[in-house]
Image (cartoon, one colour):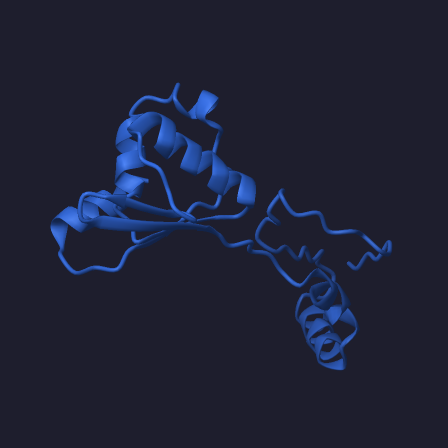
Length: 145
């Protein structure tokens, strides 16, 4: 989280975007962290700071206001000569497309190839964690080995 400031000081003319992939805490929690002000100041050195949800954006803007005394105008914070845009960018997968992909003929061909190549072995297929802020309904009890 300190990287935007480090980059800004090291190289001029950079366009810096920062996306936090974890929840941003409320001010009551954040203020207890060591170096909270330094982290906040460093994040404001980015041109764009993004979060998964509207609540995380509001938490960050409240931290900026309460810890540094800086207000925002529609998510834009101006500090000295720097302008930082703060916004929400929900990221996730198209669950239905992913879930139904197993039924696609091309997918079935690839599954058959993998099963043949690893005959007799247990195959575990995994996708990088689903963000726990998203809820994906399970519509069928489908198991493959």
